[in-house]
Length: 309
Image 1 (cartoon, rainbow, N blue to C red):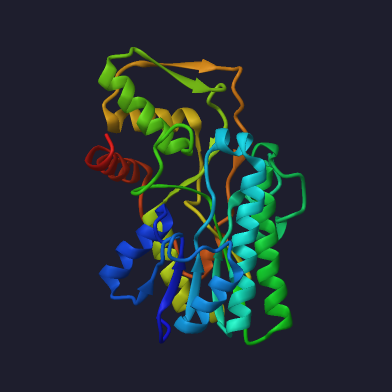
Image 2 (image 1 turned 135 degrees about the vertical axis):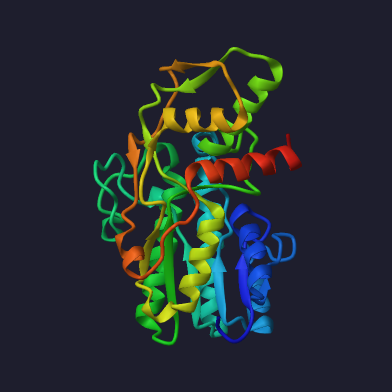
């Protein structure tokens, strides 16, 4: 690990809290202010904190996030807030002389409906998925800004990890804000608890998705901070395989213990038909996810029961 503290933005979010858990196990010096303590939308405040703290590295995990319903409902907020936070942080880091930034992107930065696994060089080579375009545009712009700053200022190496969809401890389970996996867990738990004999699935359930356990992303982040000089400007982090939405429902039903049936609502939006990232470069650099789908679902459901259920 680098000498000096690592500043983590988004320390109260799912990625940030998983990073904090792993940092305790590995004795990593992390500073993770909440959004109340550090408002990334305020450039002067960000620059002041960075000049005082002088972090050895920044992990930018903050952002406005949500599932398909939230993205459709609030595209302005998803675009503007994510761009403002990323732009302010990167420009303040450059001004404060922070040498290393690890920015977290998103697989929604890739063109929609690609039949093949998505390679890093494909960012901004095709149409984005309309249902989360605002969020995707902000993520693309922040990743490009990392690249531009690194080109102009050789002492600043700002790089981007692009994780696939995430789930795990500290996730959001409210259906108004959640992604697919936590939404499924909540829905199945509620159906089991109320004795419902059927659960609705948006679309026909054949759309394919790749979800990585958030604890594995935390491991990847610390791994590549240690190997920062060998890290390319953009790197995918994923599970390495995808599953049908129907398979997520079936696997989660086994973990939750739900015995009912599934009914498909073909009137609902489903987003991309497939979204799988190519993880071959991460594999070549010696990293691979360690948590299986069932293991991750079980750990996530245990967290749900202990904290929310």
